[in-house]
Length: 220
Image (cartoon, rainbow, N blue to C red; front, side, top):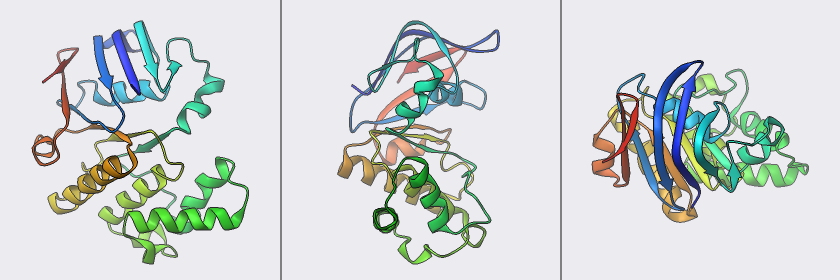
C-alpha cells in the first residue's frame, strides 16, 4: 500500500473541501480522481505531498503519517514522488537538459556524468532524446508535458501524482500522455494517481475511479 486514507477531512482555510475521505492506492495501480472543477481533486492531491494539511482519522503516504509529518520532512517524502502539473511549471528560458539537471542537482546527484546518463535515459523513455538541447519555449504543448513526465521519473518514484495532465492538450496528445503514464506504471511498478474531468481515459486505460462531488469522495 502506497497511500491509505481513513476518515480524513480536507480543508481550505475553514472551508471543508472533502469530508470523511477513504482511499487506498496499491503499488502499480492506476487511480483516477474525477469530478468537476472545484470539487476537491487538486486539494486531495496536494495533501499527498504535504502542500495542504489534512485532519481526522488516518493518513499514510509511503509510510509517512501525514497528520504528524513536520514540514522539514516533506523533501524526503517528495523525493519518492513524481509530480506532473497541468501548466507544466518548466523553466522556459532553459534547455531541456538544464531543466532536468536542475532537479537532479537539487536531489543530490553530485556526479555530472551520472546526471547526464540519467537525463538521456528518461528522455529516451518519453521519446524525446533528440530535444535535449532545445529550449522549452521551442517545444509543443504535448512535448512540454512529456518533458514534465521525464522530470517526474528522474528519481524513479514510487508514485506519480498528475493534476489534470491532459487539460491543456488536444485529444491526440492527451492520449499519448496517458499511454506514456500507463507504460511507466506497468514497466516500473509506479502507482499513478491522476485527477481528470475526462471520463474517456478510464475507458481507454482502465484503473480505479473515484468521484469528487458535494464534499465527498466516492469510489465508482
